[in-house]
Image 1 (tube, helix red, strand yellow):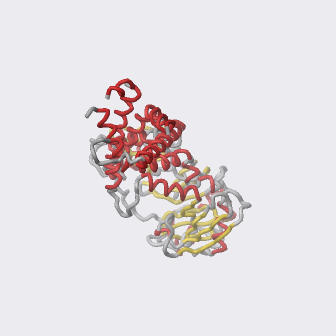
Image 2 (tube, chains in turn purple, orange):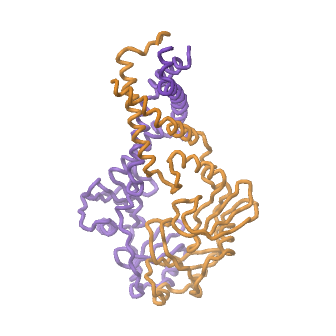
Image 3 (cartoon, helix red, strand yellow):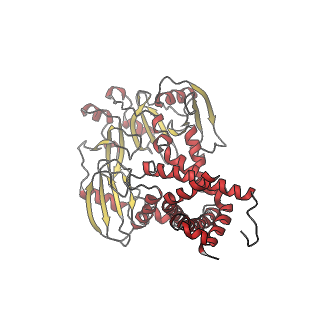
Length: 234
Length: 241
């Protein structure tokens, strides 16, 4: 058989098995390159508030803090909901105290979680559609190490959700429809169909056959585009 | 159907080379050593330093009174066993976004500027290899090893077989990361896969969007062609195909 005929045969047969994955690669790849990654990661959902601390807000001293929490590490005086707070941790827990009174603001109440979510969300006028406490069985998009969290769903374009930690008061992650879809697209792109297979033999095998099939395709392009007359001769 | 076949043929001319690059680099990602590609061959956790004498710490409220600039936050940190306060004046969404800091000695309140000597010591704390330092430079962003970093950094180069470079945020002392030739080699393939010829560390560029759309059309026309061959019964195990 000539190169031309051989290539046609193998291109045709290999593509019967890997052609669908080519379609999946190109759809998921196109999706991922077109949507801006910073938008996907929800960077546009949160405000970048620059709020100046005032010394008058701080009536609970650092010295007192260390007396009450001698194992405190990485103490940070910062802002939450326009009031000064201390954030720190020890070897086990995270802490959040009012810098005015020294009172602990944890575990974060539902009302405070809603306030924090509204405060961080880029549009102050958006309504919250649902608030739920997740203590076990986290959804696909949330790592179990963040539990327990408050999930705050906003009534806005692309159904954004904020996940706010009960034990630290921090925004641990966020999601919206296009990010959720992106996660799926990525899984399809790397053929992550079989869970718990880090070596991903399926992707390796399909990639190799896809490469071979494509090389036969290149031979076909050569014969049909650059040497179209030869085609008659075969 | 004629149009589909004609499109497939001519699109193949346009996307062939890029498609092979995508498949080849994709195959590389599958086969590469992922732990090596992270560039952390010699990275170690900086040793747990001595406990700070918190009785001697200045009160943050005192520092606030002295500051004329806007202060978003004051963080008590330790660098080379010495406590400091890190004042943030302009906060980015992430550490690697643009941030503006002042570093103050937490006992005296004296301004500390991270110089060559300090940056070198900070880098050495995170380096587990035996090699000596070959050079250190203060560089502004963007830099090739960490294209998404937006802050100026100290680049500390080690004279090992992997040409390890350690990056320390020049204003906060934060470890930006380690890089080495293994990581740079892998990054080259990411650059190819993402068509990131300007090396901005991303895949949202016009050239990849253009080729992605062409490739999408190419794959769909090919898929339809395959379906047609199937329907027409052209997939036969005999030799006559």
